[in-house]
Image (cartoon, rainbow over all chains, first blue to last red; front, top):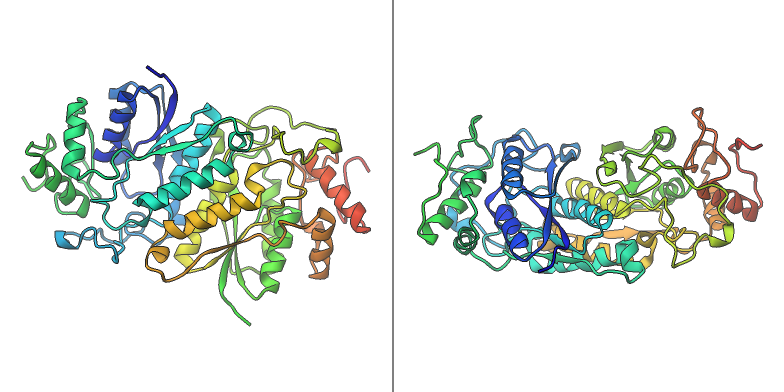
Length: 233
Length: 233
């Protein structure tokens, strides 16, 4: 069994938490990386802290970055998160949702790359998903592959041929239901996680945003109950 | 003459200032992007502000990021910047200098990508240099090309085929002397810039660090005097 270090991007949501469980199950020593990036609520970070603590990760770093500097998205601007969007629209290739944050995964993976280089880690885990991916361009396999190629040219270790970096995307071809089933088989407590884009101050999910709907659909298809109670219930 | 917007990474040093002059000369409307990244002195940012003001850029954004979170380099850790390193060692392919900051250009370009997407800009300028590049892996042409490929897969515009992003590296094959000559021909006042890794509190360069030595060698080979007075003079 390996005990190699790996950087795991952790938002505190369902996907990244499952990704962390998979990394640990593969025998990696996970280093959890979260971002305070001007999102409208910090409840997501509270969830990330709960998850990191529950997993007993070696280190959990929260990096401050301010994507509001550039504007451009509902998640960082002061405009309303869209509600009650028709589920059939979700995942349409030609429609980029307003909740898209410019270059977000590129920025997040870049910080992951910096930490991996300092740790001497050859592995980064990110819980992107190409099936239920909501139309975000930086969740596609071809994007992740291109980042990996770039990353291996960017670092001192890459130049010296000492190590090759791998970006792991264990969820990329799974449905939300399969992700949940995989996580449950690894003992994940989804009651710790938060998926909602617009929760109440006490952390209760709205049940109406795109992320809540994807999550509800996933639990329904997995045939299990979501341990989190929605505002609408 | 085009007036297309372009994001220009601006450290306030000699290279990025020349790069800004070239972008403007090519007819772009430059948006200057600098970073407060836990470097040991903020005099570099003062230089960036002077340069941006002198060029009358539309907007100059300084993004706060903290690379000290991960440690790993003399420029962000509390260790001494190496002095009086033999000039012959500089640029040796197999030696990564201690002043290397993990994934720095990848992080900087990622923020540039985010801003470009918000501005609708198709062009990013970065003053990297492959000849006098001091052994930094993320200054090589193959790295820049890989970033460009990745960036065009990362963005909404790329997915929709609306625009292709170009990373411009006008200095990449120039010697330091050629960079200086090019800048002077475009009217750059190098007295506004700061290259030193370890200046005095009043901004006077040390004259002994690797960056000061490269600059001095460049001015000497260009056959012109550096308008900045060194501490040792």
